[in-house]
Image 1 (cartoon, rainbow, N blue to C red):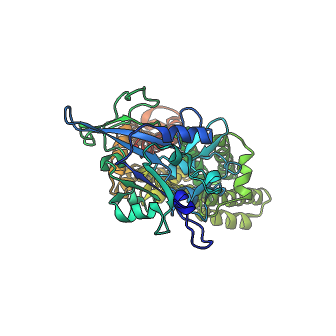
Image 2: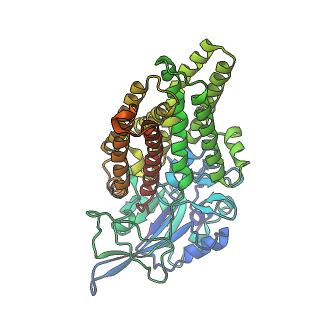
Image 3: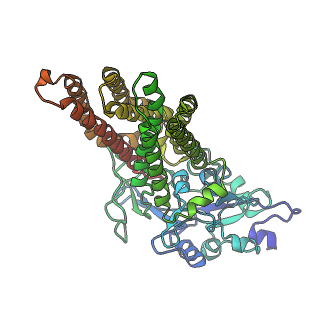
Length: 514
């Protein structure tokens, strides 16, 4: 066997090889040697995996069979992790390997939401993402990846898939193969021979309370009624992939919408003859600062935020969102200064200029969520409109609680209209979801959590009515009822949005993707 056959690289000219994997499950014995070799070669921490073997048992005794499936990074040609990474830490090399620069990574975990294969994990000690890099330190020396070398059955084949003479190309050409989740458009570079089809489809099998040799590190995934997998298809061994986005993200959605809503309300209040002074601008800036603080705190180390500004990946909506936040803050601050300086014309111009920027500040997360290709619940085509509607409700809530009764009927009517729109947005959002099992299952989980929101919306309607009647204390005989109801209604809007954001983020991550 010559050198090119041993490493699977091309001997033709200086063209970079296009590395890939074939997993031949006719040979795999489920021994986990690949997992152990990978962990040893790359110092993978306990409890984390760059490659792992999932066991799926199909059938009922005595006609049951255990199927092994080797899962790992697919080194996609259209890698969504590369697209979403805000600091180019993830990149596609000329030899087709998707690699990660640990010195650049800021720990935002966006890549983990973008990858449809659960191929990345978060290394807590270093505060960075990690993944398979095809043992690039070995392939650059003409050696095979550690998992390939150690496999006792040669079930893992690595090499240059662009050279028709390499063993991997012959396998792909001559055998019937399958690849994972082609519907995601990632163009994965891992081919499977004779893999159990159901093992390659997430959430298609029963997730038991315990595994074959261990307890689960994370709870069983929620299975809504109507989504139960066949009882004779059980994942008896797998690894944990806990949710990566939590309270920082759903709180940031609310603070961002409060800031954007205040900026939209400011020129409209002036147009309606309500003297709000600099209150909307102060609210916008305070909640903008809170938004940035949440983003930075979520990274763990504040100095990392600077990398997003100094070395941005312009394809990432995390970067574009940062630009929108910066422009929004500059316009809001400029309008506040102009108001304080008595430059009413300049203030008006800045306020109106900030309205579309505020809409983008609120809605850019819709495009960020679209880049999270692993999470179908986040892909509603009406997500931008939903976020803007939430910002409008926040702006109307701010207008409602401003002191004084100037134009109170108009402010109350605007608030009621925005609350009505807010009540309709879940229906709009659901109508725009992709027609996939993952989206439907995640939406069913989210809907089960939304009952509290529905009750709060009814309470909001009652408070709006009380606020309207309370304008004339003689109607209800309670002095100050209208003001109290207005403040309670505004607070309930924030609570509804917080609960809605929480269910949206948690339900989106509740469906297995590997």
